[in-house]
Image (cartoon, rainbow, N blue to C red):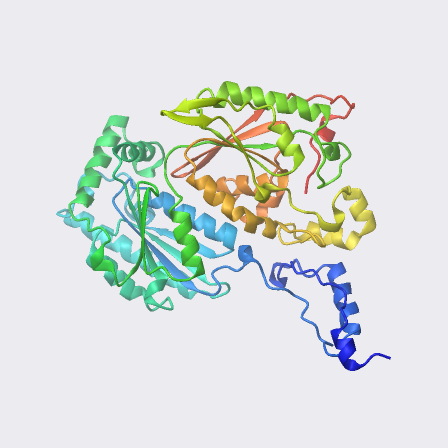
Length: 510
């Protein structure tokens, strides 16, 4: 007979540590419940075990904090781009309740979009009074939003030029009533000194900004917007030593130089890290699933199988496309894959020519393998078909179907877990200025695609249901007001060498 002390020291069954929190309705898996019951039945000292483990970084919001981000800078400096990128990043990867309050949108709703540059001059009394009304409306709505709830904290982004130092400090004091401390109001200033970047942003404004839809010519738009910038430049006071009492982030030329002042805490640190990687330089992100794998052929999920003959055909077609359409124009394009063999094999036919670029040695498409790009881990169901999973464990199958984002495979991962490890990938993608080809897996590419395609995929809850077909490249082109996508099918619909139909060549994957 063992003693009580011996019973207390005896090892029980190991409990899985990774678990979504219950407010997402993912709950605890059946296997974990059983383990908890078995463990507690053998341990008199713990008759009421803690069944729900803490959330991960993708699910903690702001940890209850309320943060206001105040944009600062002249027009055509990428402020609105940064504001909406921050909103998407914080809500998508951290689960934060986040909203942008863009003063320009208030102006367009209250006074119309087509206002000439003279309307923004400091000596235009009508325009000045109207802008003050817009600013006051945006701030009032912002404070109402901040006071509306504390479910997971809140982040509000006040998007305006905010060029006056006195005005910025007045706003900080006004917002003290809705945040925990002065340091929870963070100014983000975007400075551009590169004339080519400024010109690019002005051209992007002409193409996408609602203010200029009715203007007759490109030259007219550029002239008017340049004059508008000069109106604000005459009263612009950049962040500096006079603002040492405030919290702020200053980024110059899209992260070429970054200055921080009084940035405290985890989430403000992540905001600073994210902002320093942002720029408005045009780029392409090419997303491709691996070629058809042996597990695809047998409708199995997960695993680390090689390509089928059809998959190798796709690898050849992909290499041809990359050499003819990407490297010929962008010799510094990058190649990223997961560490699993089916993605590595898919990119193996892409050449890695040694060359000189801008006088420096360069290896074209040198492959970089990321564990973070590995497919979502199916745990105990790895290597099974969905039919086998449903037959073996219908309860787990139903739980996953009910909440695909939060469901965690027993001893495996959930999409929320994948979001957490893709946080680093997104920082790196935002930093890149050259095209990046990512060869990965459907579960991974769904999240990357959904993050960038904000107009198509409104919330992260939709991301697990995005279709990323085999044999296709999705070319993403982010811009200041969103992102476009071009889908290029490299292999036409046909039966593979094994006689499978097209449906079998595009099997469901996680």
